[in-house]
Amino acid sequence: MIENGRESKALKDKVVSLLKSKGNDLTELYEQADHIRKVHMGDEVYIRGIIEFSNICNNDCLYCGIRASNHLVNRYTMTLDEILAVAREMPLRQQTTVVLQSGETPGINDREIGNIIKMIKAETSLAVTVSVGNRPREIYRYWQECGMDRYFLRFETSDPVLFARLHPDCTLYERLDCLYALKELGVQTGSGFMIGLPGETLGTLADNILLCRDLDLDMIGIGPFIPHPDTPLADEKNAYAGEEEMFFKALAVLRLFNPDAHIPATTAFDAVFPGEGRNLALKRGANVFMPNNTPVEYRKDYLLYPGKPCIDESAQECSSCVLSRIESIGRKIGLGPGHSVKMHRGKK
Ligand code: SF4
Image (cartoon, rainbow, N blue to C red):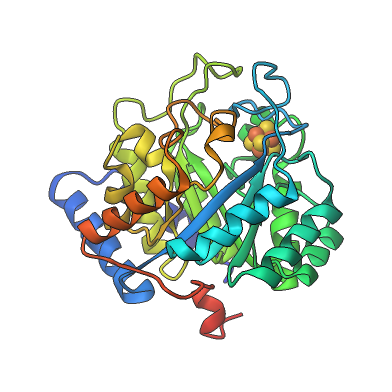
């Protein structure tokens, strides 16, 4: 639905006011987000295992630790056999989705990525999510034909000027065109944004949340901006430095406006709130957990931001930790693939 100008301003004002919640209002916001999550998504927490299969990227996003200009990074690409070996183990750890993630130009071509999707689909019961950046529609369609279930591509910020400053290699509109192409193809589509990019205002954050709603996404991933020391933003601060509660407020408000999207408790929450960030995220609107399955020898080379947790734990250790964290907050493991709730309800 396209609102007129007055309605959309009122809506944005409402989001900004929710983001300013304090005291009892804040407690109520978190309770409401948790309630909406329970009503629309249930108590199941779906476990999607990530494989960071290559850290090679030609792009130079200013905030990213594996940007092309960071020559301190040791570049790697996992072999097909290595990727398959990890994927085969995942169902044994109650993981029902594999998320294949890499830089935008990994060390393998798009056809090889298609082959990996086909082999994972043939050999395992896993749903396959791919997250490798902007591509032409034909490539998304090809991967869909290979068996890809979902695609994840964050827009990072809804402010086109801020987007242009941070992304020398593409525009916000090119990124959004990719998302529209995926939706049109019927691929379950995920996107999201960073919270607190330098130059962001509360108005931008509200627009980010409302853009997720307008895109009618199946999955939404958000996480705080954390400056990486080997990037041009090394000396910048998160726009909400000193008021980190904003990260959770953003998550809770996101859930209010996107009641039936899958929302992960992303690892970056643990980087800011060690040991409890992701648990708190699950209590404030999130319903997905994404343990890292990348072999330990590669993990230290896939640092999009510093302080990333779980870089020394094996996939088995990560998995046990995840299961006990979910049980500790009284939730259950999602046993099915955790496909789009919207598609199941026949909305699309
Ligand atoms: S954010 Fe993605 S596209 Fe940008 S430099 Fe990092 S890996 Fe490449």
